[in-house]
Image (cartoon, rainbow, N blue to C red; front, side, top):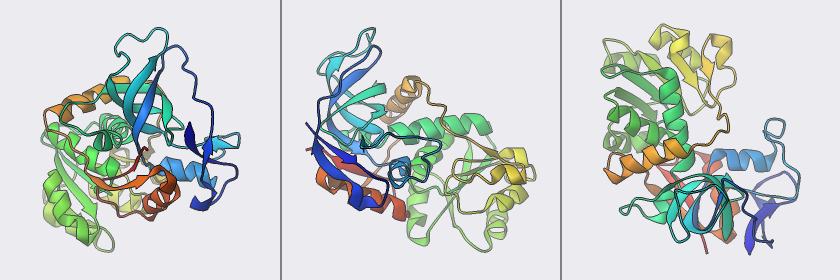
Length: 301
């Protein structure tokens, strides 16, 4: 089969299509014929070597963590899916014609493979950080960087929990944030003043998804450092705020919750653009450039 691989750390140009053996399925896993693969920031961060100490890789190596496809083999001990089922989930080396998933959920009938491929990391991250910050119904939550994949999922899941959301994004994405259900505002100079005008009663919790150096402003707005959590700024603890990272556990339960919400039309992650497998480097470059509205997805074949 064909898969995207890299033999050295570097820019998007190090990604190459290669013929590799079909991956073997271990107990507790499933293998899928990949129809689409989601593009996440962790993919290009691993490729460029910026997280090699936290996420070591023995090169050459494949890339990609999310996929949607059709199950073609089920590992020992797996009983919730069968060969032929359409699923989305997280695994390893998903920019490929076939991939092994370690967490999965069935794709709702109303969701296309391309959209479902963009769900796993955003849905898992959104549920994890909302649980961690513990925003309650009736409270106001500020999300810094609300237009991307994780931000889009977090806005919708927070609104589904009865939380009022103020979201930051670039000027061109203001209407999109409104469509998601957030009260939109721009980022940059004057953020504190703009948010206070939108929320005169104050902000209860804040999430930093963009990692754009605004932790002090978020602490100022909430008045409580422990009410601020980031997934993208490792300096957050210097200001008393928290950082959340994926513990690497089985995420099937939260993916099933995401599927349930998508089936009821309470969650949708628009696909901003698709790329063929051979253009995986361009897909990662677009992701790294930021300012995306929704998700970038690689289609297979």
